[in-house]
Image (tube, rainbow, N blue to C red; front, side, top):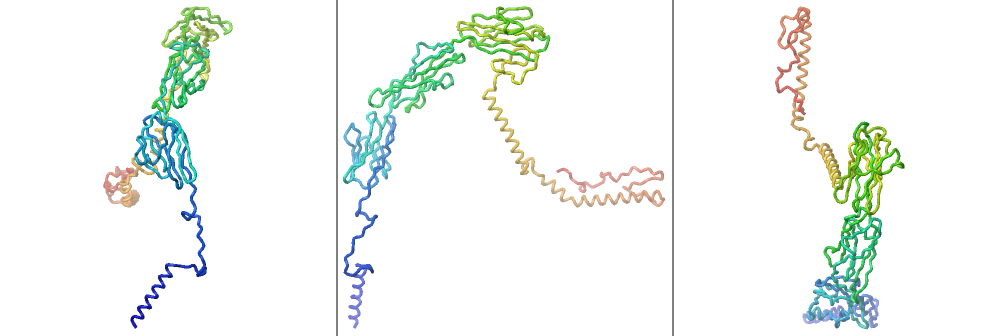
Amino acid sequence: MASRKLLLSLVCLVCCVSVIAEPQSPLQAPNAASPPVVSDYSVGTQSQPVSIIFDNKQTIVNPGESLNLDCGVSGDFRYCHWETGKQNAIQVQDVYDGYIEGLSKPQITKGNECGIVIDAVTIEDHGPWTCKVFVIGHTLQNSKNVTVTIKPTSPILEVARRPLIVTEGDTETISCSVAAARPRVQIHWFLGDEDITYSSRVENSLTDNMGTYKSISTLTHMFKAWHNKKPLHCIVSHYTLLSPIEDFVDVQVKYKPWGKDVRLYDIRLGDDVEAKVNFSSNPPPSDIKWGYAPSYEQVAAVLPVPGEEGRYSTEMLTLEDGSYSVILRVLGFDEMDARMSFHIKVANDIGARDFTINLSTDEAPNDQLADGYDNVATSDQIQSQEPLSSGTLAAIVVVVLLVILVLLCAVYMKYNHLYCFAERAESKAYIQDHAAEAGDFQHTLGAHNNEAVKASNDQLNGKLEKPENNVTTLNGNGKATAIDHNDFSTVPAEERINTDV
């Protein structure tokens, strides 16, 4: 009996194992053939599309630097290599295995399966680099241009002589050249601190088939009197330079005398007046004359400087850096002088310029510095009036900001009762603790006063036998004794109200 049960159990176990090993769909006939499964995601039934991951932007690199050449593959591929046109194809796998000197495997290869690293770039590495990826049936490739730099030669300003001598109002053409550089350079022009690159044009030309350029920048500029003694800079910047390189030449501008007319206001009658005309000249002035007349049209500058004419006299001062001053002095200024127009004519080898001096007893206008005039409000001398420097303006702004900051801090501390604005808690507590005592004291004081009034009435009526201490009494004549109930000197100190808040 036991053997039958064991046999039956084995048969059941075999059946269960068979069912588990060969499952059938409930919708499928037991003897029907199973159709093939088609799925877009099944591996091996359909190959995925393969594409190359590549950035073909130009790369600029200095000799000696390392360079990553990235090339990735999306999908399955057989192998890949790099071509430069100057040597045999570079097998990527050989690079990864360490067989090619100077090339190495990149640190990150995901998405960069065919990338390589040039450990130290040389001039020979300049040019196009092509990554080729071989897949079943065809090849994928992409290229990029690698520019290995060549440091620029020193710039050369092409001028006839140094310093550069020009004449006011003339237009000069000056060239600055860089013989070789890769890639091309950037050239800027400065006259003093003024950028005048807008007046130039650049021509870049290839000197070979390797991308080496010669650059020539030509400046066309009209020079003015205020350009005198300013340096002209040709400044070159380049990928290989940490700081620009330059060539420069000092500029000397020849110009006729240059300055401003003079007006003086608020002159008092009877005062001695001194007016000063400041001007510059290159070359120095060769002739200076002056004159005066009731109107500008009648003035003839025929009197020499220095010189005297009655109450009028002139003097010339030579200052630094081509600057000069002509001083006009008037003794005992009167109304006739206020109607005069004074005229000074200064000439040099380039030309002549006229300056006028107007003296007035009128009040100075609001705009004391009108265009083309030196205006002053004193009768002693011309005072130089220069605008505030940038440093002075910056200091004023800083002071104003500090004042505003202090005010804001004060408002904040007062609002939040901080520091010197904090409430004195001890005094408050003292007042609050003794408020009741103060009230009791006032009540007692009032009671004493009432008793005093009552006692004085009784005294008048003959009812009071004897005045008490601290009570105001009246004698029979209605005169008060020297007793004052408002004298708090007898009040104990602890009963006084502390009013120090």
